[in-house]
Length: 262
Length: 300
Image (tube, rainbow over all chains, first blue to last red):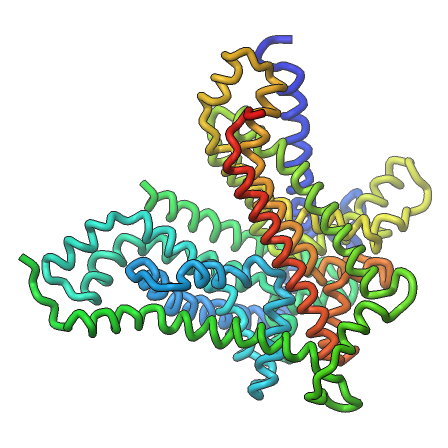
């Protein structure tokens, strides 16, 4: 055997290929069977069709749940940006007791399983008399989205040259001027990247939404319900389209953060 | 010369604190207060038609004493821990060769391979959980494939609605969480350290165990924590892929209390137990991570 391909290298390659296969098998299966003519997904495939995509677009409840999801994702992300970006900037500028604790607390809803955020907010909202629905879902989503927006923006801020701030202030710029003309242009792609990631996470969220939605159905909750009521390849079609959208979002967000890091 | 700001220093500080005020208020309102509220709820009594605000320990007592055999909530919790530990170990075992391969064997387009490895993380949760139903189901792809090849005549029921299918799906769902920090840890290992180890006569295997593994360990622990904590609280994968009673996990019991069982105080108590357990896991894993990131490679 040549030196380049020793036994251990071959082993690593085989294991890595198996790993990739495991990660991709379900994705490939769902996409392939979204074009399968039979309603039952069995091997071999029975033929090519687009009828499940047609059925999906004709499903008005499904389209409505997509609209609901988009509303929640955009409002939740908007709030998380409006609260998280100034928050990150304040944490970057100020020294105050409990800053480390605050940093840890923000990411708690990302570290803990969604059920914890779901039931805590549900119990709290019941206490103050807010009923389950769109409003409750937005509150829940904003809370965990802060856990992705704030750390990302804060990390980016800390990579900035401190002299930038001082120079701006020495030149007489006020706080707001410094933020909008000096800081924001330097962090805007990471803010945009964080927003994109938030939207993706929000659109996919089930465990928090599950406890807060009431009759307000979001897309993943709707799909979850469909999968429980038995099997239809329509689900494959929806999932394939969501896959396409989220992969596009991730690639864009990755490109953006790579651009800024340079 | 410093140009004077239009605000006094005091006002400036005040305005700056205004930046973090919405954040602090939001976290207080929708994180701290709900957490405390859940804790309080867990000590309330579940009356016939409504929750009575009288202090009781019965929810916790119920958790530790009710049921029989494997149906006891306490046994379900232990079973959940066991499943989550298996999920964590499997995720680590799958991630390691992938991270190692991309870091040390791929010469060109490393970034592309890394992207390919983490894209499954962005595949929607429901799609990943549900896809295993298509694959493992009685009329699913695996069974029909076996029958097509003639390996079996009858479909095998054992794949789906068992702990095995729950574990497979959760490993698939949580592997990327392990892979990312593991990859980063490996990426940060100075390449000359590995060269030096080899130059000093350490064999491939010694270098692997004395240098590479200890330096990757902090990343493994970070990822492992995510896999363990998140799979422990997952009630969706068990309900989609698990059997009716065999695969009920602790989060499913909690979820039921807020739904059909309608016993919120008991649900709150289970929530508190899950919460505390996960915080403990995070703390212990964090300690271990600190401990191992201080270790110098190869120190005996």
